Length: 255
Image 1 (cartoon, helix red, strand yellow):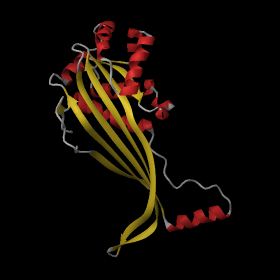
Image 2 (tube, rainbow, N blue to C red):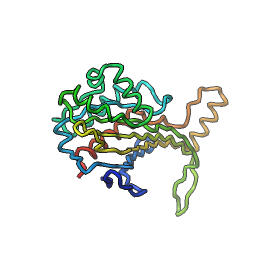
Image 3 (cartoon, rainbow, N blue to C red):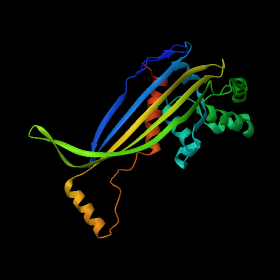
Image 4 (tube, rainbow, N blue to C red):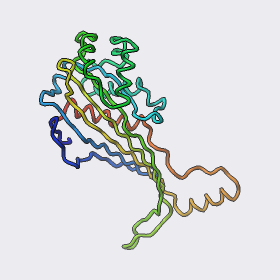
């Protein structure tokens, strides 16, 4: 588990990463989940969060171009709730639509839009939210996708033979990096209880050996359809699932 700092204390520059490598047919899949900038208030209590429950205020994307059907607030909110409930099945977790119903559509739209644009919230609205929810949640949780980037690269695929490396084909790599910001506020005190970023990287590698390269050349000569040698990127659904599960572990069971 990553070190956690109290609010107002500067964290170290480097954080440990949780990583796992999986070998699959024809490619290597590498996953990494890395926490950073973790802060929590002295009053923060996982037991209190689980006992009083949370309302997911919004799950947003910071960049307009990143918003795809799979990045909709409802879809991401449902996935975040599932990760929290998987860790604490007894925990009450309300959805953004519950908060929208409590505040009214226009007030909720303005409040959530401010978070989407800035990554911050208007804390002066928290007493109103607490009153509107009538004790059904003790905390409001927000998440925002800060980054979602796909990159590709290729180079020689080298293997060790007789004590030295030889090139046997081309190696094509597709990476996707996604970073999510989380903020948790107490509805009782109107103060931030927990904040942090979680980043995950999924990397797929496709190796085309020399024989495959010859077949590719023949495809071009005979005008056959040529597929991209790069593997497809991991889905945003896969990326956020890794992040939400790690976040639930950190928030509700930090030990």
